[in-house]
Image (cartoon, rainbow, N blue to C red; front, side, top):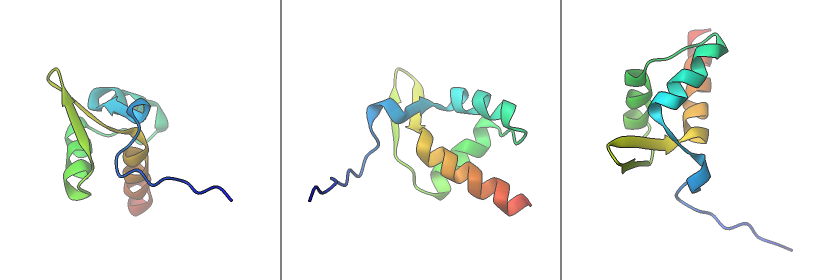
Length: 74
């Protein structure tokens, strides 16, 4: 039986720049601002990386926050 390792940090390939996340949500019918994404990060204490003056966050974590946001509006 194989066990899965629990990693408290997201994998590097999941880390995405906030502006790219904002741009991807434009086409969903539920666009958000960069400020709203920053608020989700702070409210949910999401892990971020800063590299060369850009903030990276787990795209998977932001997708979950976006889902909660959209569900709360309906």
